Amino acid sequence: MSKRAFADCVIGQGVVAEGKIDAPGMVRIDGNFSGDITSGASVIISKDAVVHANIRAQNLMVAGLFCGTAAVRHEVRYARTARVQADCTGDSLVVESGASVKGRFSRTSQVARV
Image 1: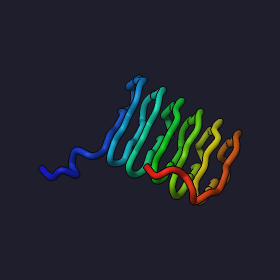
Image 2 (image 1 turned 135 degrees about the horizontal axis):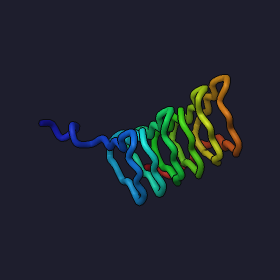
Image 3 (image 1 turned 90 degrees about the horizontal axis):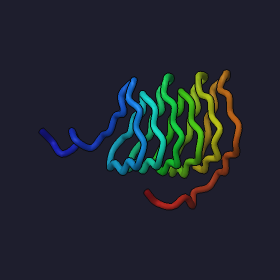
């Protein structure tokens, strides 16, 4: 198998986890997670996920519940099913109609490198 086959991290539906994730690739949360997430790529919070975390990543896509903070290098995207109570920083923000958002977004290209 290639080295890339082991670079991604998935917390599956029904899984409850807490702690620290430091992944060179994509991180996808389908279950419940509390803690810190650092990703060298994207963090995806799926529709049924519950995440209480401090996130550092290249991109962030939220479709479930996200509470915490995020320092994102590029795009923050909230899907129509997102429920967000977080302060985020990134280059751009996309909010789909129907998303529930409470928090601040700061646009900056000076986010610390991940």
